[in-house]
Image 1 (cartoon, protein in one colour):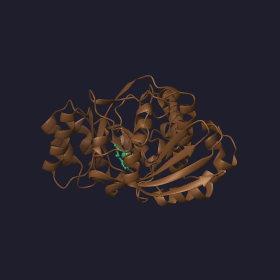
Image 2 (cartoon, protein in one colour):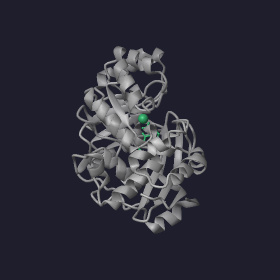
Image 3 (spheres, rainbow, N blue to C red):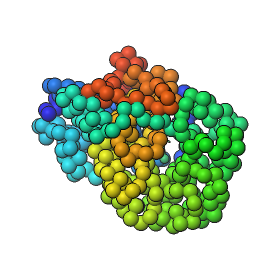
Image 4 (cartoon, rainbow, N blue to C red):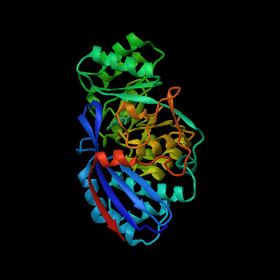
Length: 368
Ligand code: OSB
Ligand code: MG
């Protein structure tokens, strides 16, 4: 495939309600989109880097900068490319996985559109509908949280994930269990807010039969997670710590996780995400698809990934209206507790021109 041009769109998408985690509060999603043009097709990528560097070292202006200065020029200089060739081509730039993932996603989309094949088919999906979980932010009060959870359960979400932090953990979990019962699939996400010395406190979550606790400790504290996993009954799941198939294999070998959250942006793209899926499957470790408040573009690709066979737990693949009143693409709508996997060529969706125009703050175009 010959790439003619790459345009980087900075967009600002207002959230339906503020999203609070142990890392901070988000009021709007500041996204970076990649639009790649070839003679045959156009491809779209979405960069999940946040407005600040609180979740990972990457942030949206940094991602845009490395794309403009280093990654896009390397791609344009290559002449022709295929999706599997993108990561090796960009390997001279260390890190910046979210920026690289967005570029690879756009190449993959253009390539699949050219061949009339869906993302799901291209990745090896085995389902045409995936169950939806929802990530519920930290709230000001337990009654407010219970109202939010009641609303999501009414809509049909099949799994609830509560964001936790010290001071907001055992009580909200107990309240949700008491109000909604033991049958609700429930898990928690600490986004690195604890230390190993909190092990006895975290063991107080044991009686609530949680599916998992996600990333309780620092992202580099892999051994700490292994030790914690020995001290609590709730299965430990890693998010931030897993940045590649190699780090997933290491974490599993150390006993640091029983479950893995796969986010394509965090690991450098959908192809590396699939390799993590394969490594985990080979080790009998279930995976689920995480989310980063994606617009319909990233959501479409995540839904396709979540349709692979070892995605045996519901992912953070919620409907568009969980975060956005108006999505960038035709909205993903909850049906029977899940989302339909797009079947059209490539992502199967594209930005709606009027919405894109409305949310775009700047465009930078680069040509070969
Ligand atoms: O840890 O999973 C996380 C959002 C931003 C940063 C980190 C995380 C999240 C979410 C969002 O939980 C879940 C979603 O997009 O549905
Ligand atoms: Mg997480």
